[in-house]
Amino acid sequence: MSSKSVSREADDILLATDMIRLGARLQVLQAETSLSYDRLARLYREVKGASPPKGMLPFSVDWFMTWLPNIHSSLFYNIYRYMDVFTPAKKSQALVEAYRLYLEQSSVGLQPGEGSDEPVLSFTRAWMLVRFFESGLVQLSGCQQCQGLFVAHAHDPECGFVCAICKPPPRAGKTRARRRSAARLSV
Image (cartoon, rainbow, N blue to C red):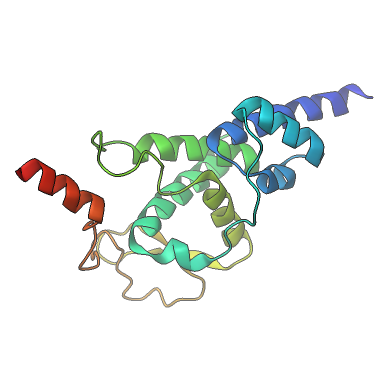
């Protein structure tokens, strides 16, 4: 084995370990590294202490268009674009670094006991989002009010686009958990 292939394998193991810690599914690891399925499954068990989850990856651009996932997806993808263009981190490494920053930024302002400990955008969905952009299924559209760039269906008209932050849907933020929490506080 040449030193180049040993170095590549070591880099793939480090990348896969980072991705596993962030919640990547086995299919993502297979696509982003040159490691075998068996090697990845063993690595997953070693890092997580459990077998990798089974099942298909989510494959719908519509999930990214609903109000809260759209805000989180847009935040993540703008971070990813910056990392990929303006830093030495490229592609997979940019994905890992951007997702870490997304987690850091999306947890700001959350109160203990408010909602779930799970991020709105999972690592696997973040990876799928990047793939959707690469395949031309989604685009970034500029909000005419705040000038932010938000995830939108590809080829949607951009004229008059208003984001979910500037114009939230009527029931935005009125979840059952929030109502129960408010009811407990009023007692």
